[in-house]
Length: 313
Image 1 (tube, rainbow, N blue to C red):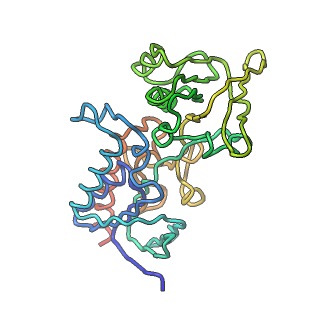
Image 2 (cartoon, one colour; image 1 turned 120 degrees about the vertical axis):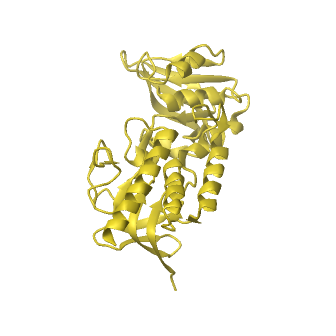
């Protein structure tokens, strides 16, 4: 028989926004329940050095998330390893169903589901996913020691991935559609001055090719966006780093969204279009997308949820 669990405050997601919401929700005596989702800790668990977290000159992303999880648990948050597959916010109490079979009901909900990696949508990209094509350098970079690697993208994600991969690869080729990067200046300088990294401007990935048995990447074909000329680049790994999309599938039909799925919140608030439902972190933040701003929104969401519940009582 499936378990049923009720809580005043249900937090869905476990990155900086979710864990901070848990800390503040616990301090407000709401006894929150936090469901971690498929990637406990969120995107920071696939990041290496974090150099912009206040008070820490450098900290490993996974370590920071372990510390935040411990803090939330010590504060009084019940943390559950489950993934919410369905959420009904049409009436209160709100109802969420987990893949473990547990049904959660809650008087208020904080959405902190973050974002997921974007893909190019090429058939060859899909074919070689997990066999040389990846969206996570920290997960898979180790497998390419002494090999040549390609990274696709031009923002912070792409530059960080390329720099990280130089720890393993003999050469990293960065493929970008334009001739300038969108990444932070300090990251751009590191990349452009790195002896192992070669930028390839005005190009886009056309095809990934490789062996069939066993399945594995042997190279890519890239197209010059100005001339249409196709160039072959031998490599053993392809890392797609073109950003992330908000993980708002649970509420895409029930909450107001914008810019491809980012949940809309009221000005200077985390309140959504449904009273009692709040959104914090990358699911709503299309502008800053930083760990520290996500944590700040998690704090706001918990405090606003506490005020909402007090008004209901």
